[in-house]
Image 1 (cartoon, helix red, strand yellow):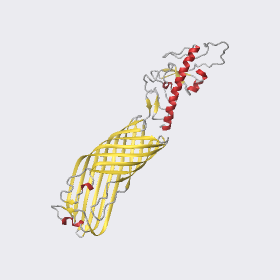
Image 2 (cartoon, rainbow, N blue to C red):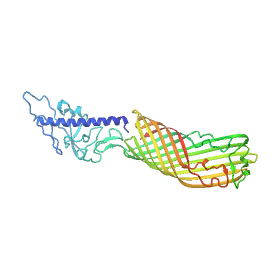
Image 3 (cartoon, rainbow, N blue to C red):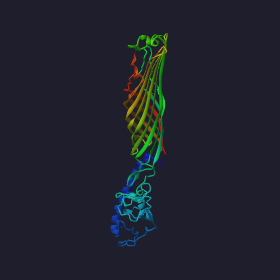
Image 4 (cartoon, rainbow, N blue to C red):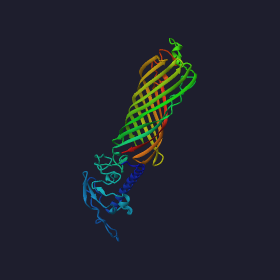
Amino acid sequence: MVTTKTNRCVSRRLLLAFLASAGMAGAQAMPAAAQTGTRMPVAGGPASSFGLDGVKLAPGETIVSSTPMGGETIQHGGGNYQIIDSSSVPMAGGASMNSAMPEMSMMPQSLPMGAAMGSYGQPGYATGGCASGNCGGGCSTGNCGGDYGGSYGGVNACTGPACNPYLYGAVDALYIRNRNVDNFTLSPNFGLNEFDYELGGRVTIGMVPDCRNGMEISVVAPINWDSQNTLTGAGIGTFLATRAPFVAGQLSSFNNATFQSQRNEAEYYSLEANRTLIGWEVVKLLLGLRYINYDEDYFYNSTSAAGQGLLQSSTENSLIGAQIGAEMTYPLTCKIWTDFRGRGGLYGNFAESTFQVDNAGATQVRNFDDDVQLAAAFEIGGGVRYYFNDDFHVRAGTELWYLNGVATSQGQINPNINLQNARRIEANDDVLMVGVSLGAELKF
């Protein structure tokens, strides 16, 4: 269905060699005809039957054998074509048409000498003739060119590359780490660990109706991170403090505690729809819309003689905006290629936050706020592909994702607890995610 990249390189070289041979054949045939007195066919007129009856011979010369070139004539696309045997065509210097232009079985009778070879209908390079008689003067639809055995990337003698519509689907397993914890803690006695690598998935489905323009949809399934730590013992302290009008007793559950735990959770997923532009089958440019969701929750629990305490900070970020991107490939061998994947966009971040403090079963603070702010997102990735054939390849690579202008759960926390805590959302943090990917792509 789709030609291999090796075939594309070889076929382009064969096409150039073919055109060069054809030009030399035409150039040599003219002097030969002039010497023998044979008239050349006039452009637009019927092709003359070839014979040796009128050839003037020098003293002592004789004709050993001759093969007439006349044969049946067929009509195709408004032109007359005469069936000939390529081995019977004499060439200057004793070369035969069979050695210069293999497999040429049809020649338009109205074709002038020196016309572009793409109009001959040479199998593997062009599949018909031009309406104007050559490829330089414009073509009728479907007459000039066609690919050289595949569905995209073929050489069209008049219009350049030709292809058939195709679909593609890609699946990537993601192993991503969120670098946002930064050993955050509200206790001097213990803290949180960094997020571990977590599994996720990415599915991409696209179509290319022609060689250049297409569209695709890509979804990153939810990736969840979780970091937690606990401490049991006597005299566990806290960084929380009160500020007027609060008094120290309103945080009694967090002071001199016998048990404390901290937990941070995060979730990421995205959906994007892009218009694509394919260039030379090694560059894909993207322009589209994208939705990114990033949420965080932080929980700080404490137990002391005064009772149980809880501090909770939760944020939700819904990023909606436009992005541009590019994917590029470069061959190392015929089957092994490197690639680059990049995305970048500006978004409106519809951010929300909830902040709550409970002490000894009584709620001390509970605030909610939302806002719309400008955010940005970037993705960079690189990897190596192995092509089993032009329809199927596997890929392994690295990923780096970056969000800027988002609200994080830690960013809403001020250890000095008062009635104003998190009453106004803070959405100016950034999040860095790194990891690896392993996937496959199929064209059909």
